[in-house]
Image (cartoon, rainbow, N blue to C red; front, side, top):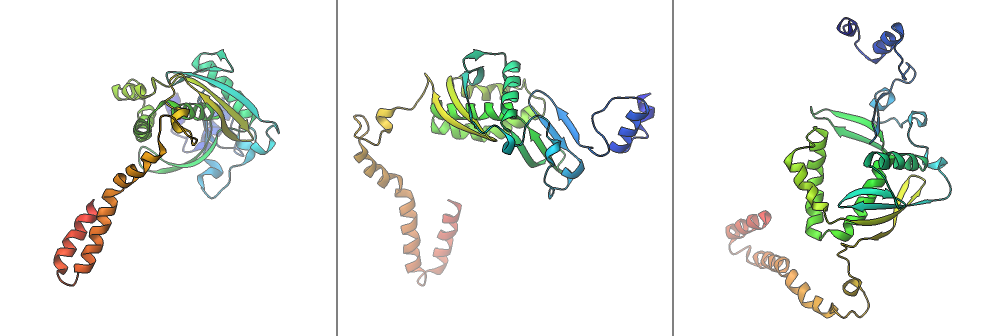
Length: 276
């Protein structure tokens, strides 16, 4: 029977008429014909006026979050506990992953957190404009990122940023149990601690971060007279670190002076420099 009905449905307006004819309850109308997908992680809005990227989203479209302008005038602070890269508690209260995300959705939505308007590239190649609401996801992302700034070294953070797009592709493609995804998760196994966030009118700001696995050492990072780090050592390091760049520049100047004497040789060397 479904197949018989579908042959008459060529668009969303036809689908609404079909649902109306057979008393199938749907939330959309011909005046509000947005295509929506909702789960615990987010709510997506597409179609209708959003198909033109030049149109601003209508305020009445949003369902999970208030307009940041209308959010409370007083900020709210949250302490997010994280164990091995996974958020596990809110203000000291341990929750299951689903309950924690649901709670953050409620709190974040009240403050207008997590509204995202973007033009994306679909799997088949076309571009699509969508507006997303993900209050809880935005809060969790900020908390994890801030704690990682304490627990991950520079190179690991850089590699993690490079992996992030691939990680998202794996999840989007339904490859959650892929060995590659599991391997990338190991990057954050040392990320344990707590992050205090300040929610205010659509923004998420970090107030503090603490971790037993922190790589931050005040006795090394201090701008005052530290006992471990001798700031005078930086002078020699700067000279060595910039040696490669200064030598390349020096070579370019020497070639300019020799240009008229041996033009072909200079051209060849400049081409080599362009590849470095």
